[in-house]
Length: 212
Ligand code: B1M
View 1 (cartoon, rainbow, N blue to C red):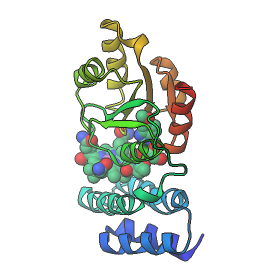
View 2 (cartoon, rainbow, N blue to C red):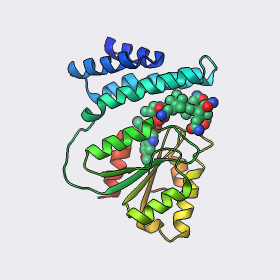
View 3 (cartoon, protein in one colour):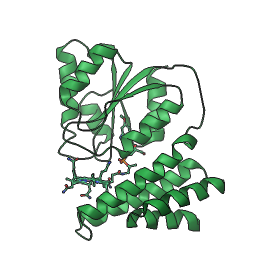
View 4 (cartoon, helix red, strand yellow):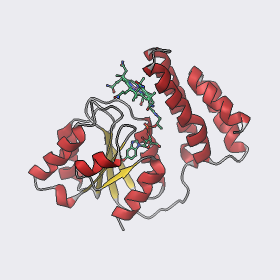
């Protein structure tokens, strides 16, 4: 691993926003691929933060600082994250992090990457109530609804959204994709989602397949 990627991970963990921004810029200038910066530098740092938080080595303020540093890095990377640019409108996707869950870094990355590929993204944000997903489906008639959840306690809202869509006879009109760290392919099958993405790159592939 290059020094810069390693330093980037360290600075994310320290919550050093300005240093993270600087290092991401330098990495881009040095020709490192944006996905490499994200997947090898920023993301593992957050996983390590999650591990440390889980084992009480750090507490919420440190996790919040690291999250802010990660978000600042992603912000710098955004314009570079697209692998193929397209002006064509390829489909409408509404995205949101489910009810009770404020984790939105991963969902934002998925949204940025899909948006840069020509899909129209309506981002409902985080802590999105079950019925807000349904209301937006009625209002906007999207091709896909994407739900993100980062906690085992909140992923249970995914089937609630799907059931609410079924009850209103909307399920056949819209595809549903799900993702987020605790979400597994088995869960996606169980709740009868149409697709699952382990990471943003996979989410893109799933969307491409579903909208073919
Ligand atoms: Co929270 N948190 N957190 N947290 N946090 C986790 C999720 C946790 C695993 C940490 C731990 O205990 N080890 C744990 C959940 C445990 C569980 O449910 N089993 C946890 C907890 C407990 C909490 C609080 C309850 C802590 C507290 O208050 N005591 C609290 C909950 C608040 C709430 O939601 N109501 C909380 C708060 C926070 C912060 C606010 C500090 C911050 C979030 C800031 C933000 O998002 N704006 C935060 C963070 C940063 C994390 C960790 C450390 C990192 C998450 C992250 O951003 N990863 C996390 C530990 C971990 O995940 N290992 C943890 C980087 C991101 C790029 O990856 O989100 O996985 P990820 O997204 C990926 C893929 O999953 C996928 O693509 C993305 C890009 O590749 N993907 C999709 C995501 N969504 C997708 C949707 C798709 C397809 C793919 O289709 C629609």
